[in-house]
Image (cartoon, rainbow, N blue to C red; front, side, top):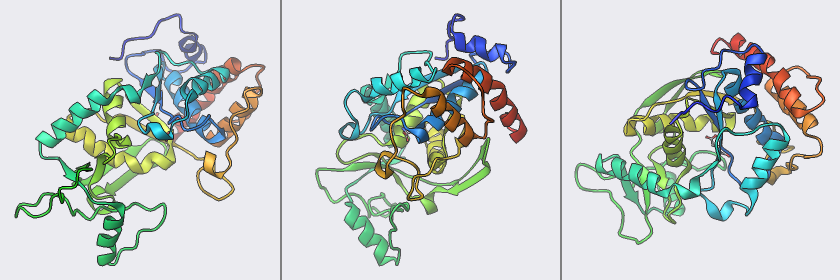
Length: 324
Ligand code: GLU
């Protein structure tokens, strides 16, 4: 999948000119994968910038993937608006963006493989029933916390369990095992997925594909070698690694970036007042995103020059972390 990009791409030349690693586009493919629920803001630009810098500092390819599986939450026209915002900041993907809303057949094939292997099962529990089952075990579900699936519908060797025959049913993954992985910034990580998450959803009862399945299928199909994204998503990595193992797919390397917080202390988002990026002032936006990533102030007259000058600073910072 990972065809080398055209040598005429200026960004690769910029990496080489900046003294970063020699260009070997086949060895590194990164991506920025926004959900088009709103325009890019100061928080999402941090992830976009980090993924771009890391790809270019490795002489690699950088792709844009629009994660629009949950179509009712996606704003019309937002995919092209986000691409225009990235372009205004000097970041241009090496291929036309993929849209997850067109990838249903690939997700269905992956789900079939998991089901055939006995690793996915149907579930018709409502949220209320899950909360009641958890409450019966003395567990109160806190807002923002993981709702650990109690396994009600998981088929059991004694033939018990299984759905109640309601028409609207989700698919869940049989999550087993403790996953150890290394984040290039955060270091060694461990999650007992069965205990901390439980069997997680692959396809919702309303037919919407779950983020976990879509991201794993697409990262493999696009030959993604390196995932660079916000640290609010770090907690999903162990689930994704379990799916990669179950589907026989490679696990990319991971780097989770610092987050920009809103006034309420949660990750900056549309809900807590994030303003869309001011396209009239892309340099100020890049400077602010760079500061969150730990880059020094960079003097530049335009976004392309800013990015070019940021590359050696990023490469040096990542090298200092010990996991370049
Ligand atoms: N679509 C996800 C989001 O916007 C990011 C997915 C990823 O980078 O793995 O939060």
